[in-house]
Length: 273
Image (cartoon, rainbow, N blue to C red; front, side, top):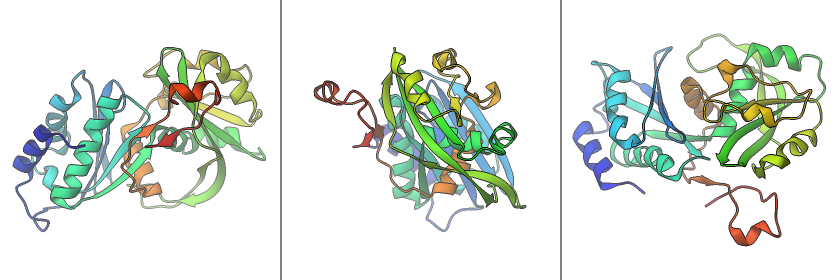
């Protein structure tokens, strides 16, 4: 998967052995959408940057240099959290290439998450969700992202209370953990409302409205929606979610079913290939 240009740049930037790191830095990267998003966790502080770019590979290393600052570099990253999808194929390839090359050349630990897992984590960690979920018997989270034209992807999670210690924070706090109820679904716009309603009223919806501003207009009436500040991929949660799941699978997540499946499986579940 790795491109030769990415390998060449990384070899130049690293030039180290596995013992050459100056500090332990964790990083997260999202290249699934129109913006490159990078977050760095050094000590207990997050530093984030995002930039809209058509050719994401061209701005990636400049952005890392900027967010890491003059005292650190790619060689200091001990853990990288990356998104496997869904998203644009070329964009996903950039992030997964970086992850696979850093893993091979520098021996770093790489964890992956999906957009659904990150959105669900953002929702369940918020004050708004805790207030909404209080007193509900079986609260759920529906994570929704735009695919292409009138096509969307959705995955539903059940939320359960637990004790947690978020990355970058020392004290434990009460929060909600999300577990997927079923595989992600590929849906047409006219199918979304009925799909959400099939899970009942105790379903909280969070969508990536940064990539599709009118996405919430497709929801049925009477369902709680995440506020605007949460309705996008927050760079810090790329790291938080990756560390929580510790998934080492770097296979890209492809969801749209092949044409031959459409006639027999109108709601074909996503799969990794």
